[in-house]
Length: 406
Image 1 (tube, rainbow, N blue to C red):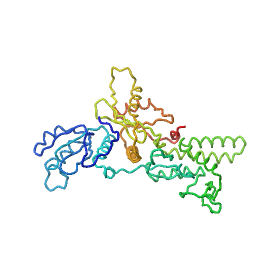
Image 2 (cartoon, helix red, strand yellow; image 1 turned 135 degrees about the vertical axis):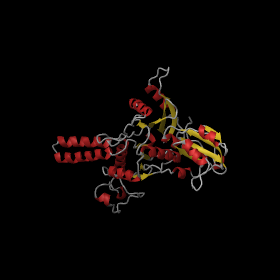
Image 3 (cartoon, helix red, strand yellow; image 1 turned 90 degrees about the horizontal axis):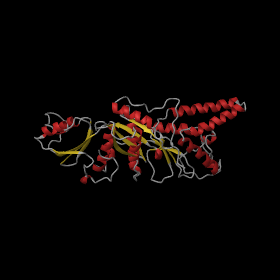
Image 4 (cartoon, rainbow, N blue to C red; image 1 turned 30 degrees about the vertical axis):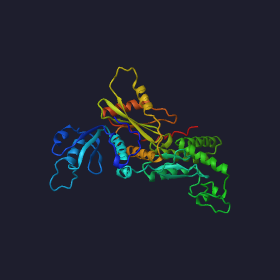
């Protein structure tokens, strides 16, 4: 099976179809034998001939090609390319994710100027912490910064509205600024409604020292990077102190904040992580008999598929060891542009937030440790075609973002 590592896009006039496994010539009048040889299975295909190539994916290759290249029916407006196509290239796929990734790679090579529009890619909404600003703030964006940027990005969220709500609700626990201007602190500045409501340290009119503001920013970063655990720990200690001092009203107020924090993170999908530390293993059905396909998402990009054979072999390795070896083989590092990482993140978001995504996804924890037992059970479910494991959090669970490495 082909690898989906990113390659340099080629001009449209020099597209290649090497990413597709099978090719066959097409000649009008001699198509019946070709049609019977085509598999009636999901596939990504390319039709080459006069003019631009035709690239698409389908759930049934034989039926789709018969419609495109068969004898045209009278009085129909259905697209027919019978007299324009000279060659067919295709690869059979085992899942919607595999089809989408292969189609992305093929369109990126074939139509480098408009493949984003053809795929209808919508970049994933992210919460961004602007650490390159003298007075850091948070905002919602769909753009990733250049390599080496100090800014931090968290996501992917299902929509911009969801990202904005999460950001706003999170900042209610802190006093970091919400204005978007580049500040030049001036004691004569009147401030804004947030400073009047004591919801901002007001660096705009030097309502705090720079050290105090940076300390508050550090608390916000710890909050996002720990999935709220840093603030939950603070509030827990504060509540215990108030209770020990018999300040029960104060303890009740702090307890209310803790309940609000739990409610906030109970609604956050498991996949919401710091983007540069997001590591996911996606287990998908395979087009090869006796196998499942593994895709590794790391460094902001997909790598795979890796065909993991399920049947017992002469090897003495356990399934967990085989999965670990597969992850290592899929962990190759490659320099990619911010645009490529945005595209791969958009494809991950598209798959994850589908109403019924195929296969299962497993995430490494803060230390980069994988839940191998859960992965092995998930592989069994995918192989048997059973119902996927739920990826949503219950009301008692809290998202754990991988923390920033020291």
